Image (cartoon, rainbow, N blue to C red; front, side, top):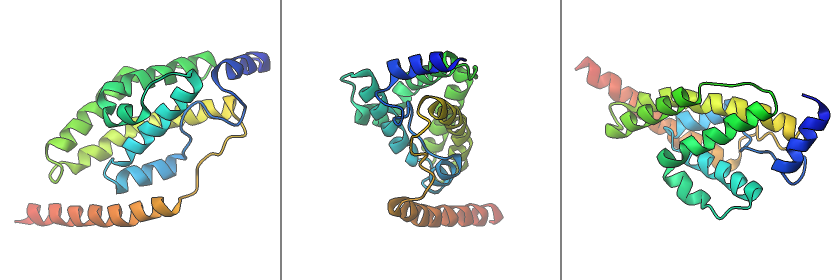
Length: 179
């Protein structure tokens, strides 16, 4: 893709070269926060992505509602990612498969949160693939954006509290298996 084509996409999609198209976060940070919050961080992640979409498209959507009802709005977000990736020449990916994987594993983890918490961890991989592609798009469209690699105070609180809960759940699972 030529620099002029990238600039054209950047001019139609965002207001300035430091504003990313999708929520920027390092894969390491996303993985840690998703695991330590048993997937709860995904609500914030969806919110931040929809907030950027609302700003970019000048729409009246509610990022909060779309984050809470993620299972309805996951597909439209993935479609936007897939379209953006194709427009800048990053390539294609199995969006449908990733969506189905995330929804099924999220549903299974909610059906028995203490016995099937590991389904949440399986569902995380579809979000990691999404984020990897989003980070590549952001690097092309907004090369000067904040990459969001550092853990904030609240991130650390979530890791400590959620990680402790995860450790207790893991120990509990193994104790139940031994009895």
